Amino acid sequence: MLTIGPRGLAAALKTAAAGTSFALSLLSSAAAQTAAPAEDAADAPPAPAALPAGAVGGMGDINLFPKRVVIDERTRIASVGLYNRAAAAGDYEITVSDMAMQRDGRLIELGALEDAAARDAVKTASSFLRWSPRHVTLPASEAQMVRIMARVPPELPPGEYRSHFTVVSVPPETGGTSIDEAAGGETGGGIGVRIVPRFGISIPVIVRVGETTLTAGFKDIQLSTAPGAPPVLALTLTRGGTRSAFGDIVITAPGAKQPVAEIKGIGVYTEITERAVQVMINPATEPRFLARGTRWTISYIDDDMAPGKVLARQEFVVP
Image (cartoon, rainbow, N blue to C red; front, side, top):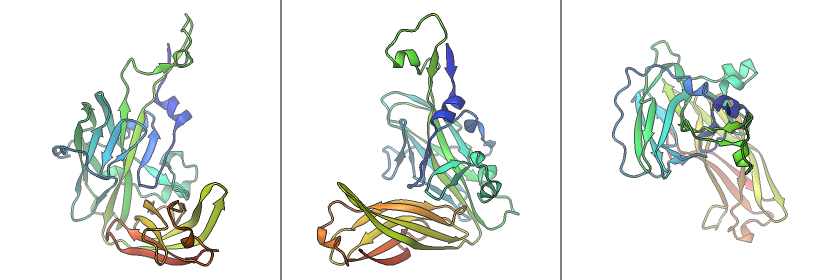
């Protein structure tokens, strides 16, 4: 029986997503081995009795909480919780990987970038992050805390550095589905192929050194409509300074009791200066708030260093 391992599967099926500041990937075994020594990491704290609100989940059976980790000079230690939401026990490998954000918000592995300048623009934290444990076996509906420590070199220039805490499921040795079985056929005496997927989920680990700055804004705002579909507001979120942006985009109209549109957890990492975003208009919005000439207020509200602070605001008149 010929087996396609994680490397071949990742090359064929890999996806990455960003928006709530986490990436979902089908990851190769090579990526699962890019770990730095953790012999000095502290013992992991006890897991909570219940899954906290705001946990993020992916294609597999694992949830992570919180949805992102920020480490600064006040604290160099953080904890990430893993929660197995499956009905059976699971094995998971824990690594730290480096990814780059694209203008459309996608996250791709740093090594996959062909542009050397684009790779150099990403300030990674993987070289000075330590974490423990590296491998976890979780019973069904159980949680485990993983401790992350940042050992920042004294000569490191001020700024923001980022890598991604990645958890990948380890399939059983006999797991997987052969192509013959998937097609409902019977295996013969020849060579077969067995596909063994390894689902993974990532959240950013951000390390800030010294003072950082941030400015944000909007541009290229355009409302588009299509028959049978809710209107969509397309815009570009701009970022400047030495710190990434993370927050919610909220669109309001005078007299409306609820936002005309809202999208949470939109991040713009430091390697890019702008990100294209599409915000779907709330289908429950009253038609009078969508009428031509209505004035909307578009706000980008911080959910990072100063939660609730308006990072950017702009008026938009419905055409």
